[in-house]
Length: 580
Image (cartoon, helix red, strand yellow):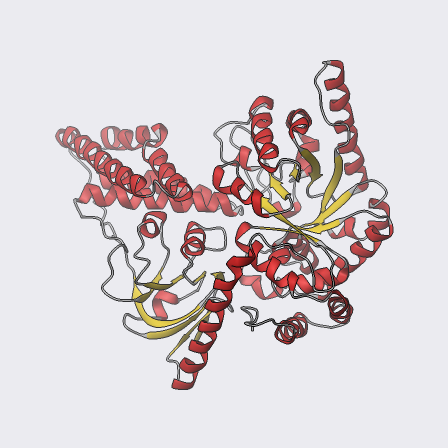
């Protein structure tokens, strides 16, 4: 049997399954008596104290890893949330609900709201809530903490989900791989798996049902599958594949600071995608040519208020100073529809990915847009800033946005506030309508960056967040490469740059095609940088151009993937791509 999911941390391992089933609370259904209320509240307070102590210990253990410590600190914030605390106490004292049932009811209510969002980041907050809920209920029940910190032997951990507290103290020496039924590339499990270099496949439907403790399986976290009952021949073949992948990943690390120059002397540019202003994210500036995508919406989504001009200015300045003279492409807020903002009432939409989001929301809420533009213009004197608008579907929206930027610049001039007059203005190409009028767009912008995740979604009419239509979301669809080819030719003729900042930019199979199409600016997550540079250095651009031409004439995504895999094998240097 083969089970399939999303590979989020590469590697191939063979080992025994250990199904991880965390504490499962049994909730008290019987109501309290009035006389029981004081003791029930005291038990709730004691559970909160115990939970806080456990999180303190876990946060201290993560002191040398700021990113993971931040996750645990977020759990502390949830535990101490005054609104949820008040609602739990109200259920206990006012409605005579038992402490465990009250905790479960309030946490489940808030988590359910977050799960309805189609925004991955908001969905992960629901996971955080469930993590704290379980910890609090376990402390209330007086059950000691069970985690994955001390395992008796090497295993492949299989779970419905792994919460941050499960993975924070992971026994790295004995966890060969991770399989979960839920989760994706942006989940905490994925982040920690990549950090620990543990092969992981998430979103494997039926994993807990079809896999059993002690069962030997093959976890292929390159292709995204789990093979049960492997034959001796399969074990030999996948063991060899695992050794090849491990060797390749080890070798990758040496290329983090390498110059991304092709074998025939073409210098490509590798940029960084960032989504937060913290030391861990900004440390990547030293290894790249600049920031190709600065997702400013984190300021809105990770805050309990709408950030003002000064708050945004300080954040943008910090990023620009971290990158120095290197370009930083600031994307204006890509929120709305599926990404709800605190303090801003947005109507529910039946089709949020086709709704009021990105630049559409900015133009609908001009107060928010002007505030962001002013902050960005003020920060521009601290570095090499570019401004880019997302979700642009028509030229009139683009022209209106450019007018706002010009007006705010003039207002700064009148106020005697300096800003960089030479800021380049560009757009994200995600909507097919704007891609099809590239000859008109090129006259109005200084550059474009292609968001291949959304572009693919719209071209294929397949919701990339919906597992039911996952087969129809085809990253290698011929239409994707044809659109990219047309954009590259149009902008090259005008002497203006095209970059790609979606997942395709860091995809080892896709990079040769992008290079062959003439797209020589790629922006990606830091974890993909070394591998991308290594691949570029073994590319011959003449061969890449021939490959790009061929790919645009293939009929199916499967044909294209097979051709790209064959190209990777033929052009390998030493050990091959992890896909080979």
